[in-house]
Length: 160
Image (cartoon, rainbow, N blue to C red; front, side, top):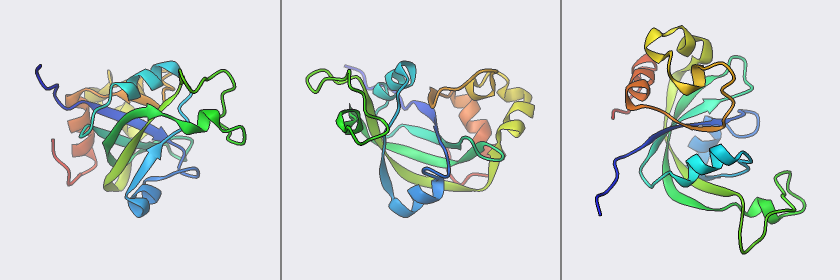
């Protein structure tokens, strides 16, 4: 069976909940609490070694803050079974869990975030999902040409 190539992603987190600085401090962390089926399915398609743009949502301004790497592929998110968790889902069953999570590790924090407006103003990124009107998915695929452009705009140390 042929090995699939690395896929690229964008993962959103509210910086007051969990930021790129938190990931830099922690090194590795679970990406939990995703409760949208399409975003969950994208996470289930992630493989070890895939890279993701770490995006600060609900920030002023929102934007790409850095890069993380997938270090553990999708597995059941235990918060779905925890009655005390804000992510508890009473309809999810232990023998057939609805929700998954992945583990990510810190790769790089950009010297300056690339704001959503800056992304939208770049003609080469007009087809990037995050720049589309109504793009609210917390996990989404990114085309290689778009990922590379964001790296260049951020003066990133990381290369593809």
